[in-house]
Length: 362
Ligand SMILES: NC(=O)c1ccc[n+]([C@@H]2O[C@H](COP(=O)([O-])OP(=O)(O)OC[C@H]3O[C@@H](n4cnc5c(N)ncnc54)[C@H](O)[C@@H]3O)[C@@H](O)[C@H]2O)c1
Ligand SMILES: [Zn+2]
Image: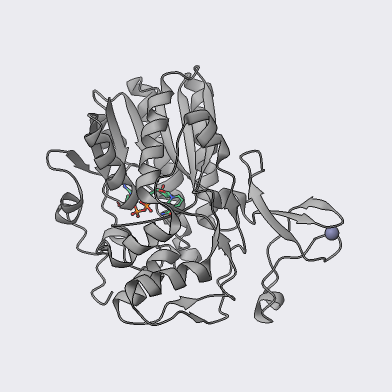
């Protein structure tokens, strides 16, 4: 299959490109080499270093319809990874997030419709769920709203039952949970899904969204305001500093290895042809074994041989307390199985190279 991988020079995209190439497919990369992801010198050299030799790479923005149309020539399906990621610096980043992620997706889908390309695998995200799933001893399944600044300032990090204020038990979110995005990035990831679903209905296309949990592994970008927490900790250790753990370190996440995510994309691409026209399906993509942020920091520090993590009590507005996926549907329907467990994956990640983002100190 000839697959256009947008964002193919990025962290996850470059692993997908390698996975597809080694399975005998022909990946073609389209990537703008954004400075926020690749550093100000974001040159084709940084991308080429991460990609297998001979992979055609188009350096272009997904918002550039003519460039996308050219890249789609002869393509069987699109694996859409290109996006601005992370929380960003501040609200001034909002137009760029919406531009890259939503306008970019709309341009891509319009060009796919024009070119008659009917298969799409979309990089979704668990951020679409907001706070994860909770149960109150009295009220059952509840969905707490955003945490109050006064609570966070006072170190009360656990969300409470919106009806009675009781402590809650965090659980696993299924694909049936309603969207509840809590920051600009999350809004753009949810909108990408809605655009993809609208495209399937309008064109008879077939789309699968993989809602990734916290992806980590070799080639993760060095820490920038756009990076994930595993990269912050790993970059601190590379500088010989202790990882700074926000809140009390008890935030629960599901850390899924980037090679497993690449394999999930390959499986999703393979089933597109079996789907009926006009179908959109979303799958949570996590390891199935949640851990706390504090556990992740400790595992990395121990494996790296660096200073023990420091719990700072700081917080970021827009962060959610717990969110953990139920990824059973992906296992059961698509036969995907994560191969790298937490201990083994963190051991490797603690010493694996990070991608250069223009920072020289980490
Ligand atoms: N890393 C995670 O934990 C995680 C979790 C959930 C979802 N995701 C999603 O996975 C996808 C890949 O993320 P990543 O972690 O590899 O990030 P990344 O920044 O390493 O890769 C994204 C790539 O997309 C490119 N890009 C961004 N905007 C573009 C545009 N307008 N036109 C062309 N190229 C553009 C960037 O240059 C970069 O190479 C994203 O869609 C992201 O939302 C990532
Ligand atoms: Zn209650």
